[in-house]
Image (tube, rainbow, N blue to C red):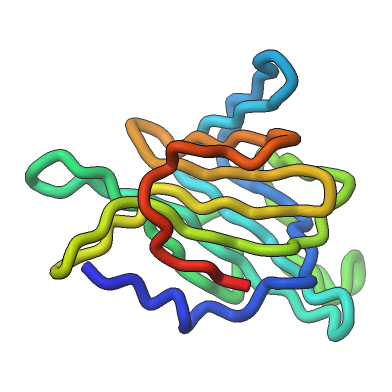
Length: 163
């Protein structure tokens, strides 16, 4: 399976304004936070144009047990329940979900990791490098998100840099 990461909008310099899910399980371990969920919605906003969009982060397991991370760019936060009320919040969706955000949220770089050979690429993790932290999202029985001060390692092969 080839990843069409080039079709994703450039996120370098944009803001990661929120991490959303119907249910987020958040806890602290040492000096980093861990968020577990079945599916995530990330809201990304261009600070210059004020345009925003969402990345739906999902996963599936193939017939031999490999877990794939799936990134889908979309204009709405579906499948999370939301409404659009322009008189309350113009140019915004009101999400009825759990949410999490970080204060310093400017995206410096996004990279994808996993396993690749001559026939296929399996995306298992993505890493957002922000101004003062790293957010790694990894597939498994649930999607695990870690917010750390240091760049994570042991995520597999670099599949794509998405600056």
